[in-house]
Image 1 (cartoon, rainbow, N blue to C red):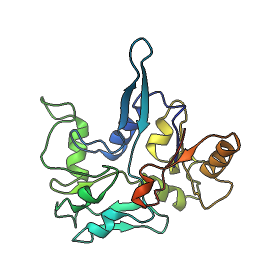
Image 2: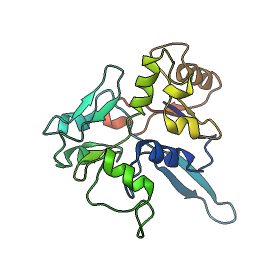
Image 3: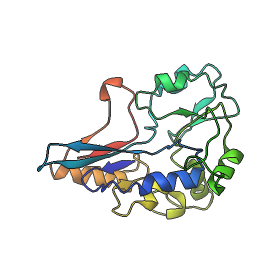
Image 4: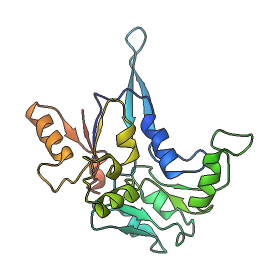
Length: 213
């Protein structure tokens, strides 16, 4: 995935779309957008940083898991099997990107009151005491493969956060394919002298999420 920071308007549509698509419980958000105020009045402005699991090529969470509940697919996506997870939270400590959460107790999505349909779905999809995180919407990518669709090109095979972004700041696809949407986007960005970078490069995890700034 490539995220163009100059386009992001901080609307949080990606975060909400992710929550609805994956039924993450309570106050757990798999794709939060960090809002930061820069400068001082009258020249203050907001900066937005969309975050998610980086699906690292060398994932420290996978190495740290004592129950082997974390695996890496052939396409590079890193997934957690909640049924194998014992909630040791070693992965939470190992992740340099703060991308993993353990569902410690049941709570409503909007705090207090009666459970919403989203809370009901969360109970059916996730397990209290287990770790969870962004999956790159692997179920949508798999649907695309089954039906001959291309992730990043066909909506049904593309992560919900990408589809929901009103300014199209997220670009998704196969980086090993030269003509894929993210490959072309990064190539064009570099041609224009724009910076293409990853978060926490010193961690040497080789993340599969790049930013254009």
